[in-house]
Amino acid sequence: MTFKAPDYYQLDELYSDEELLVRSSVRKFVEERALPLLPACFEEGRFPRELIGEMAELGLLGANLEGYGCAGIGPVAYGLALQELERGDSGLRSFVSVQGSLGMYAIYAHGTEEQKSRWLPELAAGKKIVCFGLTEPDFGSNPSGLQTRADTAGDEYILNGNKMWITNGSIADVAVIWAQCDGEISGFLVESGTPGFSSTTQKGKWSLRTSDTAELHLEDCRIPSDCRLPKTTGLKAPLMCLNQARYGIAWGAVGAAMACYSEALDYAGSRVQFGSPISSYQLVQQKLVDMLSAITASQLRCQRLGRLKESGAVRPQQISLAKRDNVAMALECARNTRDVLGANGIMEEYQCGRHMRNLESVKTYEGTHDIHTLILGNDITGISAFGEGG
Image (cartoon, rainbow, N blue to C red; front, top):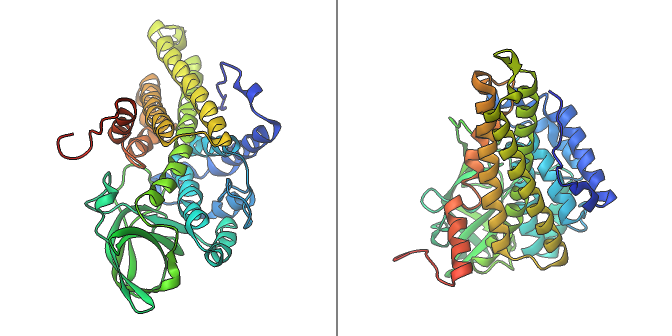
């Protein structure tokens, strides 16, 4: 089926030539290189590592960062790039998000010049891979309670703990590990191969199967003192990174919804039942209209959010609203598309089932739907509903 991008409110008129060029380049990459591989990768539970070099050549790794070999594109162009990647698969966008918005951004925003010069050029070129170790088996939505520790031992730190659900964890050359140190949360760079540091690939996933996901283990793992990210004292530092990633997810979810809507519209026009294409029936038209309406609202939300980020005026709560609502919207579009396709909707030759399964995870990570609801509730009422009594 030929992808037809919905643009009911003619939003393309609001994008610059550079932004449209970025989108066009990534759209072509997804069409010609990624989509032919993704169904098999999903079936095999394998991340398509062969695409890393091509994504690096497109400038997608750390694309919104300045210098160090990074493309330095604006927030809207970056969002459009992630939209197109997730139109292919959430796992593809997750890799780019974790590489750039979490791992590289942590080094860029919180590292020393030596750390940035050492790691960022190779990460931008795809020669090295980074992961972001914040979530733990018992601490996901509440990162302030993380149990991983970093104890001072002369000119070294000794790290102990476990991290869970870590994207890129099995293939990373370096991990950004968040740990309790001297009563505060701090970030550390731990290279693969460091004694006491290991990873276990998480098997049995029925969602995000094209994404590398691992558990990280730190057992008396010794690292030099210059591996600490010096500007990471307190929870604010990892949350700054999460806001970068959540912004990209808001755009990416729109891409997944667009893929599903296009598939539903195309299928409904060619599938004949009772002597007519099913697109001629009222209930199918209602599903298509609901999808288009929801996608259009999310496109407008992303465009405005991007301009706010561009001007430096965006607030974390505004990003939470976009991540929360756009992912929920995309998941509903995927479910409606599966419904329009009937039995064919569960077959791997169609995209909607893959997107539907992926989006169940996207709704959970980088802050669950409910956590973002509480963030927004706190913002609009001034009353926190987190923790005891909340």
